[in-house]
Amino acid sequence: MDDPNVEKLRDELTRLMLEHIESMKTRTFLGIGPEDVRREKERLQRIREVSADFLEALKRIIQ
Image (cartoon, rainbow, N blue to C red; front, side):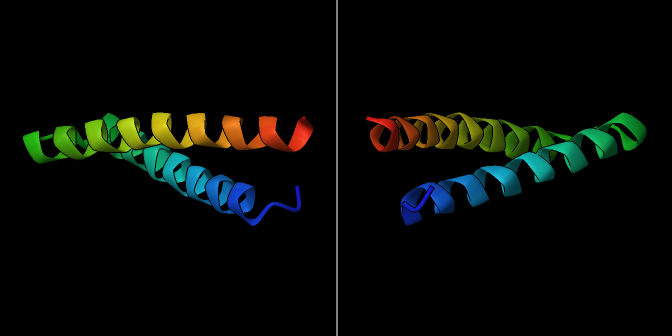
């Protein structure tokens, strides 16, 4: 993976997933409020977007 775009997307996806894991831990033990729900939805949407972009970038490298 020499494409800097792929590396950038991978790094962002990793960061988002780690944030999501921490959020799940917090939610499990402390509950979740309306602001947390909003941030969770935004983060999950961004994870979907970055995942799709990452897969497309990988396809370009493979072809």
